[in-house]
Length: 519
Image 1 (cartoon, rainbow, N blue to C red):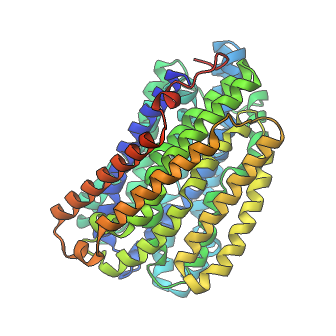
Image 2: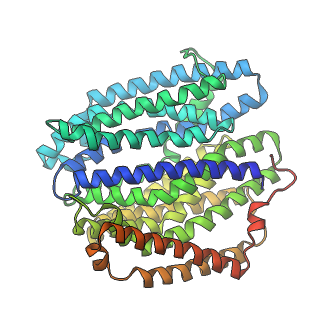
Image 3: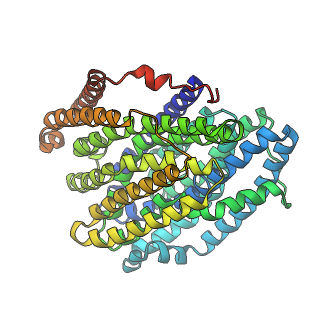
């Protein structure tokens, strides 16, 4: 495998790690300020933030990016610099106009949007009114952050991954400032978070502009018909659903959770955030790098190089995701106690959130595999097939959610999402194999056995070492941090040690570089 690709993944993962760490700091401040089950503020803010985030992951990181990057890559490879800049300018003008219209509708129709996406809030007039007020402030975040995602797609396609991966850090820092310094000075403190989301979106967009200018890709927006823009929107139509099935699943579960006891939405939010830590640091980082690289391979190299590149990414995905899943299941309560059990976030919140985190963690490997397998279609400018598969997975999630929500409450909703992720991944894999796009390289059987063995040994040791949750609840902050850090390090060392003992050779993973693959 190309050293350049591995280095790009490491850079993106490193920046994403900084983002996730500051994100955890942000969530710690949120937990202390909002709690989860004692007031309506937490559920109101998390829904007001989640709704524009949901649309952002469709218009920004989801369907748009997966349609825009392959088209931009093709323009960049086959047309001159001038034509590529012209395409970017037209794309920016049309995309910004569409985003402005959607944002305006969202702000004006906030009560109706909330009735559709969180109907359970109608039963609580205070919670409903506060959420509508906050949603009108947070919804413009969609406009800013979707344009940020477009800028990131350009930077990533040109091999500039660091700036785009660092940008979310700015969101976290602005929101931390809103909680710590602004909220105490307002008559309605929780509104500081809503305005923090709005300001953070603008800051992130401004941060990207100098990097585009340096690359001579700073757009001059134009609203005119353009062949490349038409192709992007044509690819977006099926991808809007297909690339965002996980977010739609979360949205459906949030609707169901709005009918459960107060705190259910917040428990799902915190558990999802922690599950996304390993997913973002490696899974999304690798997916971010692999899409433009697969697109270039599809344009400039043969099908064998494409298949080998996908195989390399899948091996790394399984290598990281399986032990991360085991670690989150075993250490769910200690992690939540160490990070969040302060201020308004009480021991009951820890217990409820831990149950949801374990259910989400079971699906981590499925989530990561979807992130790697879906670009195998998008890079070939096929967004229809993943959309059809996503519809099947979505149907599975609905059925499982309705089946599990009554006996398991919010935990059943998290478990349904995890199971649907495996359905999605399995179907993507099957179609890639059937079409001959992907042919696994030899050695997968023994590779999976070694990973399973190492993960099982690591999980057993961590379960023994974690001990009784009451000891964690009674411990001081420093003791919690030291104990958790110790067992995380021990878990990593045991996993790596067993892998090496079982015969996994790092050289094979680092230097898997067929002659046909791009540098």
